[in-house]
Length: 475
Ligand SMILES: Cc1cc2nc3c(=O)[nH]c(=O)nc-3n(C[C@H](O)[C@H](O)[C@H](O)COP(=O)(O)OP(=O)(O)OC[C@H]3O[C@@H](n4cnc5c(N)ncnc54)[C@H](O)[C@@H]3O)c2cc1C
Image (cartoon, helix red, strand yellow):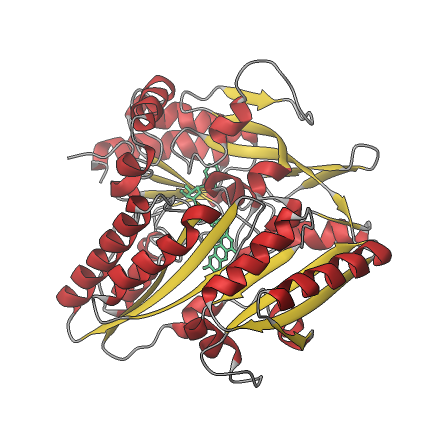
C-alpha cells in the first residue's frame, strides 16, 4: 500500500486535475472497487475475506486528465490500475500493491460513425452493449458481442484481447481495432493511425492490444463496422462424441464456409446447458451453428454445412436450441452459478489450439482437472479455419476456505500445465490478469524476456498495473 504522506501528496495534486467530485478515498468505494469478476475473489468475499484495496479511486474525464494523473503517479511511484467495466475474470483490476484505481467510466462518448470507411471512433469507457445498440440503429454491427457486453467497455475489451460470440466470422477485438489512443506511464499520448493495413514497421497498435493496463491507459479507439446481415440462420445438431463434432466443424471451415457461430458442447456441458429445455440423446454433444449474410449465401452455406455434419454422424435438431442460446447470450450467468454452500469456487480456463492438438489438449486438461474430484464441463466456444478455443468450467466445493483456495490453485496449475504440454495456449479471450500471471513465462518461452524489456523501457518505474501479465511482480 502507498504510505500516508505520499498518498496525501497525490490526493492534493490529483484533486486539482480531476476535481474533488472525481476522486474518492472512502473505504466503501475502495472495497467496492477491490475486485472484478474473478471467481476466486468473489468466493473469498463470500467467505468474508477483505481483498487488497486501492488507496484512491480516480475518475478522469479526458485524455489530458489521464496524462496529468499518470505524471503525478510516475513522479511519486504510485501504482495505477486502469479499470474498465470491472467484469474481467482474471483479477486484472485487483490492486495487489494498492495505488490508484483509474476508472474510465466517464469516457463514454461515441464520437462519430464514418459511413464511407465503415468505422466508428469511441472513447474507451463506452460500454459494449451501448456501442452495439447505437451502431445497430444505423444499420451496422461491431461484430463484437461477448457475453459480458452489458458489463465491460471498449478499453477493457481491447486491454484483454476479448472475443465475442461471433468471432469466427467477424474476428476478435484485435481484428476489429483499427486505431488507438494510449497514454503512456510518463504521461505522453500516443495515437496509432486508423488504417486498414500498413507496412511501416511492426504494428504499435498490436503492442497495446492485450497489454492489460501494464503499458499505459487506452483512452480512445477506432473500430471496424459491418452491415447488419440480411439474414442470420441457426442450426443445432447432436453428435455421438467430441471427435465427430470437431471433425464436422473442421470440414466446414476447410471448405471456406465461415459460420458466424460454431460452438460444440461436450456431453457434460450439453446436458448441463440444454437438457432442462430440450430433448436429445443422453451422452451426446451439441453443436450450435449460425450463418450471417445475404439470404442466398446463407441458404447455401447452411445446406452444405448440414451435409458435412451428417457425414460425420450429426443429427439435425432444428434451430430451436441455437436460437434459445442466442436469445440468452448476454445473460450474466457467473454470479447465479455460485452457490453459498461450503466454499465453492467455479472458474473457467479458456484455451486455444490448432486442430491437430485441440482434442488432445481437451482430454489432457479434463483428466488433469478431474484428478481433484471436481465437475468439469466444456464447450469449444470459438472456432476458426485453423483451430479453436475450449471453455472449460470447473466446480469445486470444499469444507474449509484453506482447502478450497489451495485446491483451486492446483486445478488451475495442473489444467494450464496440461494445456501447455499438449501445445495449447493458456488463454483465448479472458487474458492473464492475476489468475494466470505465474504461467506467462512458460506460455511465452523466450518471448517473455522481450515482453519484459518492452515493459521496462515504457514503464521504468513499474507503476502500471504491477503484478499482472507476469510483469512488475514485487517482493
Ligand atoms: C459473465 C461473464 C461473461 C464474460 N464473457 C466474455 C466473453 O464472451 N468474451 C470475452 O472475451 N470475455 C468475457 N468475459 C470476461 C471479461 O468481461 C472480458 O475479458 C472483458 O474484455 C473485460 O472488460 P472490462 O471492461 O470488464 O475490463 P476490466 O475488468 O475493467 O479490466 C480488465 C483488464 O483490462 C485493463 N484495462 C481496462 N480498461 C483499460 C484501459 N482503458 N486501458 C488500459 N487497460 C485497461 C485492466 O487494468 C485489467 O487488467 C466475461 C466475464 C463475465 C463475468
